[in-house]
Image 1 (spheres, one colour):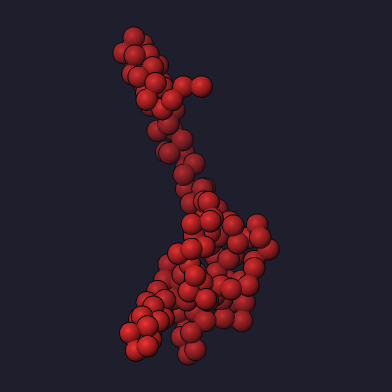
Image 2 (tube, rainbow, N blue to C red; image 1 turned 90 degrees about the horizontal axis):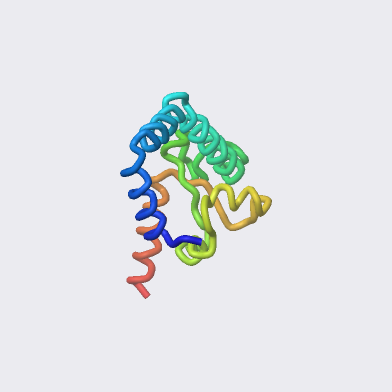
Length: 132
């Protein structure tokens, strides 16, 4: 098995000898993007995000869990670790947190918050640390 450095050197040498190979591979890559291949991936990612945020949302709806907040815009909603242990938890999860949550059967300890209330929660947490 080649290291990344060895593979890069090999590919540079290969492309220098046969520029048509490089042109062909570039054209294939661009064709995937132009046909919407990356759009379908983005759509699947967005659908997964919507599924997870809906599960953890207020009463199982795509909505912020903060009392009296009615934000429903998926671009403004975030996933929150209820016990404020997100930094440690993210270190143990490889890849997408949304995919991990779904694969684990939607475990407890998470909620959907809008970006403003996610920030507000952190401000309140830090101010309580200063008071002690």
